[in-house]
Structure formats: structure tokens, C-alpha cells
Image (cartoon, helix red, strand yellow):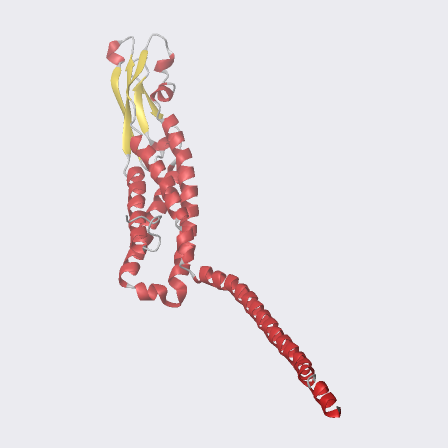
Length: 276
């Protein structure tokens, strides 16, 4: 399975998922356009407008979205605008997604055609690690900001909230109602993909870190004390063996004279026989 979590050393697969998730993120947000439809039924039917269309789109500068509604007081019409501006959070989110896409595309080319250059002097993995950490932070900030911005967009484009802006709807004799509400499913999907991108990039930090020299140098640092400890232990064992050998040799040396003395015992009876 071509997944970073299951195949952490496959940089090409990693970039493919970054590309795919980044495309979904900026496409569902940057390509959005929606609208709502309202109806104002005045007491004087000639002044009514039963189909008031209000369209809005990315980057959601809602205060610039204007529309005209009847006042139900003659032919005079009221010009209104939606409330709010979520362009900063939306544009930041899309910008992060676009740059993540471009970096993933460039990384894919490097992984495929310049693998030796990527490994040379450990610069490639180090740069990849730093960029991965930065994009993880940007995805978290961008997704959180856009989630708040989307919440503001939903409130500002709620037909009930827009009807409260109309003077004609404040009169009980007139009937105001929402015919069509905006569909926000793609925007909700963009927020989901934003946090999925954060999880993908943040989860990949450890695997990219393992490709850097920092991880290997840390392993060497831990292995050196163990090797020194093992070496000193072996030297101690060797000295102990030497000491055991020398002790055995001394014991054998001390046993030598006793055997000689034991060998001299028959000389006593021999000399006694001679004396007889």
C-alpha cells in the first residue's frame, strides 16, 4: 500500500499523497461559488419581489456583495450588502494549499530524477525535514483560521439573518421567506481536507527525521557508551582469567616440594637396613 505511514521510506508515495490532499483542499475552497434566494411579498403585490438572488464566491468579501430589495413603500428600492469579510482566512488557506502542492510536485521530481543529489551531503533530507515542519504548522494555522472564517460565512449568508436586514420584513403585514439556502458542503469538505493535510504532514515529520543525519548521529552517540562499557567488561574478565591462571600455577608450584618430600621418605628405611 502506497502510504507514508506504512511505507515511510518511499518518498515518491509521500509526495503523491501531499499532492492529492493539497489539490482537494484548494479546489473545494478556491473554486466555490454559491448563493441564496429570498422572497418579499408586500401588501401591494405590484411592489413584491418573489425571487431575490444573492450570489457570493471565493474569497468571500461579503461586504462587497450587494443586492436590491423592495421596501413595500412605493417603487422605492433598498440597496443592501451582506455582512462580514472572511477573505483573509480563505486566501491564507488556499495559499498554503497551493504552495504545498508546488513543493510536493517539485519534491516528486527530485525523488524520481535526482535521488543521488537528494542524498548528497545529507542536505536533501535536512531541507525536507525543515519544510515538513513548517508546512505542518501552516496547515494547522490555516485550517483553524479557515474553520472560523467559514463559520462567519455561514452566519452572514443565513437567509434568516439576511431577512433581518430588510426594512420591509420588519413590517408584520409583509411576508418574507427564504426560498433557497446556500450549499456549504464543499466548503465543509475543504476544512476537513485542511486538517487531514495537517495530520499527513505532521505524521510524516518523524519519518523524514529518520532520513536525516541527526537521527543516525544520535544512534551512534548511544552506541558508543555501550561499546566502551562492553570493552571495559571484557578487559576485566581477561585480567580475572589471567589471575586465575597465575594462582593455579602457584598452587602447582607449591605442590612440587611436597611431592619431593614424599619421594624422600623411602630413603629412611633403606639407610636403616644398611645400618643393620
